[in-house]
Structures are given as structure tokens and as C-alpha cells.
Image (cartoon, rainbow over all chains, first blue to last red; front, side, top):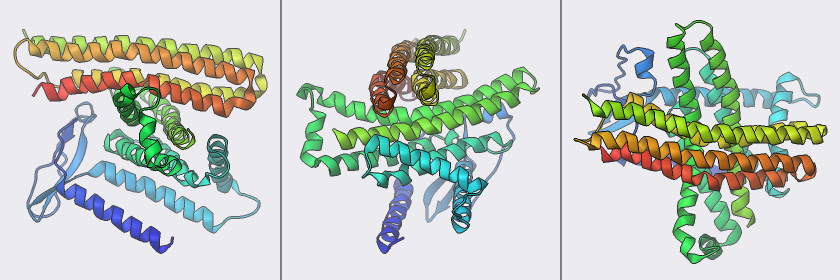
Length: 274
Length: 159
């Protein structure tokens, strides 16, 4: 990576830490706080059964210099695990690239080739720069959803923050691409497009696209998990949970990750093209 | 007698009951036209099935929102005082249920015609899929409005 990229990464990290420091703790949704201790990190796991715990987010809360810092522990750790899996496998394949691909290389080539073709069809041949974003979104969300099939792991997309984060990235990219492609004045005029009275409706429509993108993924994953817990407790945990877990984890997980990536690509295409 | 609890369960039932209705019809329509399109052009069946799955996933979104609202109602706590305890959960349930009916059917109709279009003109599949997704995303915005109002009622108005 060039020096520009390192500087950009550093800026993003600083902004993120700054926001986490100063951001108010929003009480929306169900959060389960561990007790706060003034000396370093604390992580207590109260004994609750699975059904009560299902919608709650495990958190670490610690004080640094008098500020409360709250981290969703399980989400963050599993996300790092997913990222680790992706980075290690990508680096491994990269190191042993061959002209006649082996098994794993074929799988990776399939995925990259598929999205490359998709982007070429949707955005035209000169827009390959979006391939890393769309491909990474898909692969990250796909592996995140799949990791929930393994018994004690919880998929990070179960926490609303992860789909929201991905959605914010996509939203920034969409609007930045629109401004770059059309120019600031045309971009703003685009909101007043058929009639000027529709301006607030267009703005709210854009936000609604973002919200639906995040909540669709979150709802499918968390809803599937809750359904599995509820039905398992009815069937006394015999046989049915395995089938359901496979269906919701593998089938629904893959489709929702793909829909997220496809919709992001479509929004970018709309922003760049007209 | 705790009317709040009663209203919560009623609201959850209304939300999923009506919300699921629209998505069911919409997804069925997608499958219907996808089958007709495959019968017409068996060679593009991969393309058609992929588009059908994407269209169904998007058409199911209002039902997923309704499921989320129902979970929040069933597993949550009643908020508010007096008759408001009765109204908040029922209002949230009606908002999400009836509000999710329309977008589910609408997105399904859009997906159905896109699948049929791919059956008629396979080389336009990229353009058709893109137009379908744009149309579905805009038609789902009312489902998002319902979700926002339901969440507003449950989490903000009560306390």
C-alpha cells in the first residue's frame, strides 16, 4: 500500500477512537452490560439460559481516564476472527498462485471472477475500482453468516452494529461517487428531480434505502437465530435444530450477503449513471 | 388484568400475521414467473434462478421487519401509563403489519416481471436485474417508514 493509504487508515482509526470516546451510549435495542470496575477490563458472564440471552449483546465496559468505553465484546472478537480467516486464506493463496489453479485457488477465482463480471455488466468496463469494496463486502458478510453454523460461535451480523457499519460504508461510497461523477451542483439538483416538492421525499427515500439495507441483513440473521432457539426448545433439541441451523445459516446467510452486495452495487450504478 | 401484556401479544400477532401475508404472495409471484421464464428459455435457467432468489430475498424484507417488531413486542416490556400501555404495542403491530403488506406484494410483482423479462430477452438480464432492484428498493421505503414508526412507538414514546 502506498503512503497515502497508510495515512488514510490512520485518520480513519483516529476518528473512530475519537467517536467511541465521545459518543453517547445509545440505549436503543437490547444490551446487556457487565458491571463496571474501575481497574482495567471486566467481563462477567451471568448464567442465563439461551432463550433470554438471544437478543442481547455481550459487552465489555471499562473506564479509561474517567470516560466510559463500551465494546461489544463477542461481536468484535468474532469479527476479528472472520477477518483473520479471510486475510490468512487470501495471503496463503496469493503466495502459492499457479497458472493451473488448484482447488482453493479455483474457489477464490470463481468468486472474484463472478463479481468482476457482475461489476463489468452493471457499471461498465472502466469501473473496476469498485471490485474490492463489493467483493470484500460479500465475502466478509458471507463468512460472518456462515460462522454462526459452528456451535458455540455467534455470527457478528447478529449485532445491529455490524450491518449498520457496512451500510454506512456503502452509503458514503454511493454519495461520494455521485458527487464525483455528477459534480456537486448536479448532485444536489438531482434530489429535486421530477418536481421540487419531492425534495424531502427524495432525501428520506435515500435514508430509507440505507436503513432497509442494514435492517434486512440484521433481521434475517437475528430472526433466524431466534426462530432456531424457539423451535428447538419446543422440539426438545432433537434433530430439527440441525436442519434449521443449516437452512438459516448457510442458505439464508449466503443469499442475504449476496443481496447486500448486489444492492450496494445497484445503488452505486444508479448514483454514477444518471 | 394487565392490558399492556395483552396488547403486546396482540400487536405481535397482527404484525407478523399481516406482514407475512404480503411477502408470501409476492415471493410466490416471483417463483411463478421464474418458472414460466425457465420453461420458455431453459438455457438461461441459472440466471433466472439467481434473479428469482434475489427478488424473493428483497420481497421478504417487510416480513423480516415485522418479525423483528414482533420479537421486540413479545420479549420486551410494556411501557407507558394507563391506556397508552394498550395503544403502543397495538399501534406498533398494526403499523408494521399493514405497512408491510403492500411492499411485500409490490416487490414481488416487480421481481416477477423481471424474471419474465429475462426469459424473453436473456441478453438484457443485467439491465433488468438492476431496474428491478431499484424499483424494489424504492417501493420498500414505505415498509421502512412503518418500521421506523413501530420502533419509535416501542422504544421512544413509552419512556
